[in-house]
Image 1 (cartoon, rainbow, N blue to C red):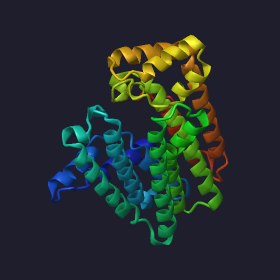
Image 2: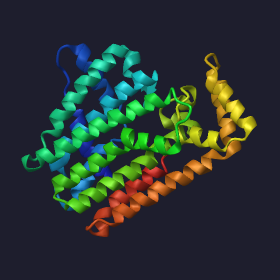
Image 3: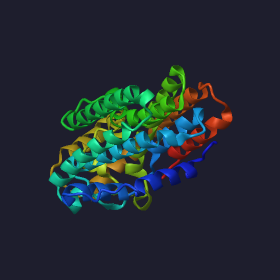
Image 4: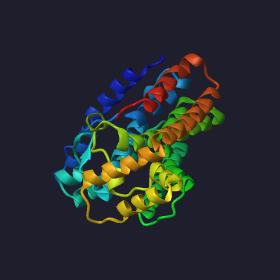
Length: 325
């Protein structure tokens, strides 16, 4: 049978709700339970199940690896929030604020191990391929995070370097979820690779959209404070491209704010946003998002499955592109 997004979301949430971290020491497991309880879009496990459903009427066979990928994603958020000193995640205090940075690091480590245990519960015929893909993806995410940290201390980051960083840090996990589901569902190698490509491109568009929302989103819908990237001087597409396009006066204003160590947060966010408006970066970012979106759809269209089976993935891609949170 073909499942729609809402049906798969219900299955995923039910599975996650039944995960019981009621183990000792509580200081290790309670933060993990809290992190998963914050919800989220559950995009990654749903993508895995959708990819499986393209080739099989029983996408549930990919459920354990799909949940493992979601647990892994949430582990990365625990560590990201510590590194970024983020106070809010999905509208709630982050783990390191409720407990401590050390607790968030250790609980995240435990979640990573638990994620592997779930991914390893895939059908035995596909175990080696799925674990190898997951391990390679996990390593690439670490590479992406390191690039992200390196960029904080560099003034010469290029747009291409930034795009490669977000491919590694964000897009490859979406791609991994899709390819994992495809492998378990019995896809051909060509289709599995096309779904990986679809995930990469939609992931790049997704992260660029996230960057855009961090500046232009509605805090009530976005789930975290607007301007976090601006406050931290993150080398996003919008900042890198704006510096490239800025006239000498605008560039001087950018650099003055980037070099300030003592500043009012709201004042800095407002000033950088005003400069973004002057150079017209919002439209350029939206153009780049659309470019990747079109590439993702081209990969999806290359699959050897009926249009009916691809409809739900197409619908989800649209939702990701036109979201406000």
